[in-house]
Image (cartoon, rainbow, N blue to C red; front, side):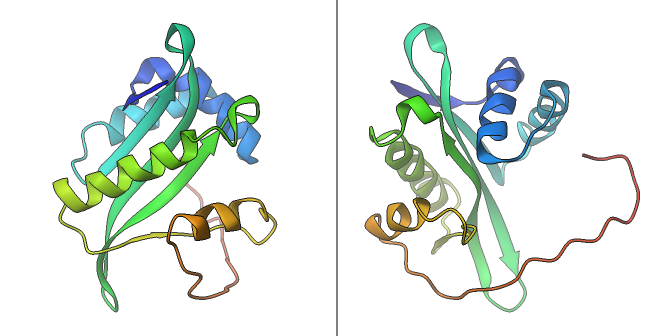
Length: 148
């Protein structure tokens, strides 16, 4: 297993894994998003690849500047295929984004949101030094537009 930056060629595999995470999306939309994200210095999308360069996990990290809290890296998504979980791949993806945030972006901290229903992910983050700082409700409102 090795890690590398995601490319548009990984779109179908990333879309499939996003479905495992509970976010079904078309590969073409992932490809469009990767084409944009790949040009942004404050974003990183990494994939874990196994045999024959098959994608078995991905992580998306982004630099955030919050008016009230200052700069940090936010993990916006992390998933490892169901057949490869509990094998250290998630830890390696997490470490890679942490290293990017510290070394490349010089950010002081990394944060992540984890749905309360994803009970198996909470001990994962806590084992890797993340502390629960709050519980919150998430709200969303559609306002139009065609972006997925």
